[in-house]
Image: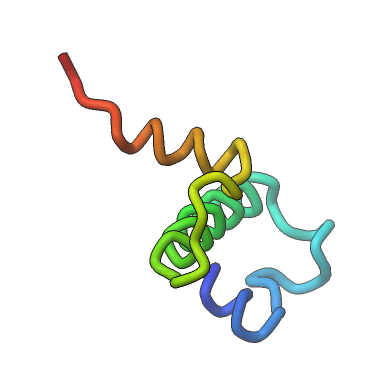
Length: 67
């Protein structure tokens, strides 16, 4: 659903942004954050100092290990 929305701009449910369930919007925004962060870090223009706080928090969270 996220990919189709990103590609076409069409929402999964009929209507606009306000007609979508909040849980769906939160999930789609989380996917967008992860994909955009990965794509930025894989690009030649990437600069760790230019990450947003949310992107940096995501990378820190992914880098945590148990124990």
